[in-house]
Length: 351
Ligand code: UD1
Ligand code: UDP
Image (cartoon, rainbow, N blue to C red; front, side, top):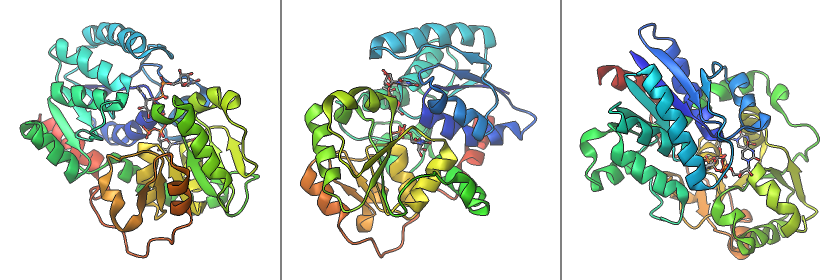
């Protein structure tokens, strides 16, 4: 069987690394890897291939940055050509980026079945580009691999139960796998020059980066927090930050880091503040309280017992959440058993 995997953005490299490792262990399956080039900086792309042992992509479209239509359109043209040439049995797409949408759309129009990993997530906020990408991708895919039971319910409400199945979350598999590696040699993954006690933050969502008021409010809130805030900065945020914000003295900006270094940053943090989808879950898996800098979350399982607090960009809510007591209740299951990638491969083969 020949699977053509399409990736393009940071979280997709991380998700695909786990599934690809399982695929490569099966001699009956061949994986062709296509990188759209949506993310291209060394520390947004190459670092993950090297560190997570992902094979060199067979194709890199090099589409780079652009408007939604421009970027997605260029991907469609490039992906179509490669699909026609490669004739895979199945196309595998991940998450909710423009690379996901382009991969699913190009493939289904050529009558090549599409499998979507991380299907069924919904914020119910159509202003998010990711929400549009998810809805369309799920609607046109042939296999929907849902990471949570809530995702299965969402798909059921949309009439997609017949193609949906719960597999658990490949990012949970990934945290379990790499946490063990970090614990064997924690010093190796530690970031030098940081305060011992800190809050870890990331910001990159359009609703914050493209809204000066939200971004200013978030930094105003950070300036009032009792601990230093370590912020590995997404290039999108770096590009606008200098013009907009007077950086508070307690905020430590660092370049984006590799995945293992990021896991270690989470493990050593007092709390996590983020608008990232992936980071909300990783905080949860690693027993850290998360403060979500958005007005809703797709990962509602993380909300119980204040493990994840929705604060938006409101300074008072952020400050209150950052100063709130840590959760005492233990975490619930709900993201699978750490073998989601194996289940995904089984389903792909039986399809
Ligand atoms: C994209 C995804 C988002 C995901 C995020 C993960 C879409 C619509 N959005 O958002 O869902 O959460 O990736 O990080 O697909 N840039 C660089 N170097 C790079 C990559 C980007 O400088 O290697 C800068 C460019 O100025 C670019 C901007 O970041 O215009 C935004 O990049 P883009 O890929 O369009 O969206 P993200 O915000 O990264
Ligand atoms: N991440 C990383 N280095 C960083 C910031 C994030 O390795 O400097 C990882 C993070 O741990 C998570 C993934 O990137 O696994 C999340 O990606 P991002 O926040 O860009 O996208 P989202 O999950 O919001 O789609």
